[in-house]
Structures are given as structure tokens and as C-alpha cells.
Image (cartoon, rainbow, N blue to C red; front, side, top):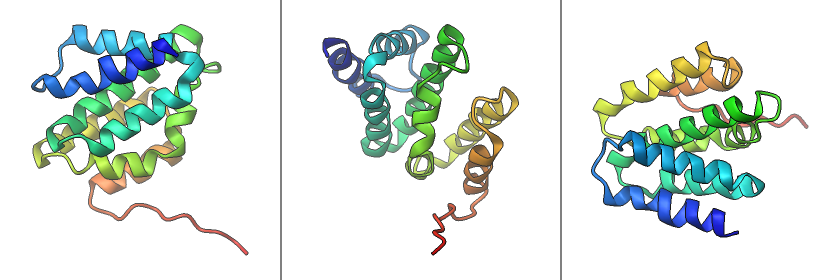
Length: 148
């Protein structure tokens, strides 16, 4: 559990002490801590989601970069089939992106850039990415539809 505490307390929430942009060294440190805490991946993902939800607008994009870095490193290290982070992030991805889009308007293009890279590299399926791109264009987020 200490690797989880290190990730959440020391790494993730210490981002607030730095003025964006976040250095490559800091991002690498956060990513390594997250990968080390893979046994607690659900908590790691929840920590990132909570950070994005509660941080100041100027930290929204760095929060996305943390998410991106963790997913890409996990896929690189463990392979696409064994990556646990991307499937977990995709569970609440609409809500996470609703918070991300509360960033300064200049930063929205950075979010779209990450989404386009995810689409190009098949990090998430396009049925997950397309609604997020639509949200960037000002369309409302999809709602869950339940059939009775």
C-alpha cells in the first residue's frame, strides 16, 4: 500500500506545487510510481480521476498527461492485452473528460491532440474516443440509455 500512498500523495497531488507545464522528470516519476502500484491500479485510476475532478483549471491538462503517460507506459511494459489501466480509465472516461473540458479555453486543443493520438495509436476504441472529440466540439456528452 505504501507504493499507492507514494503515488497519490507524493506524486499526483504534489503537481499542485508546480506551475504548469510539468517537467518530463516529474511526469516520469509519477508514471513510475503508478506502474509500481499496479496491484492497486483501481485506486491509481481513481486517484487520477479525483485529481482531474478537484484540481484548478490550469492543472486539468497536466492531469490528462498523467493519465496518458500511465496508459502508454503500461501498454509498453505489459503489452496491450495485459494493460489494466486503459480499460479502467475507460469506465468513467466521459465524466473525467467533462471535468477536463473545464480547463482554460486555450488548453482544449491540447486535449484534442491527446485524443487524436489515442485514436491513431488505438489506445482506446474509437467508440470511446469519438464522443470525447464531440464534447470538444461543443456537443453534449452521451447519456446512458437503458433498454427496458
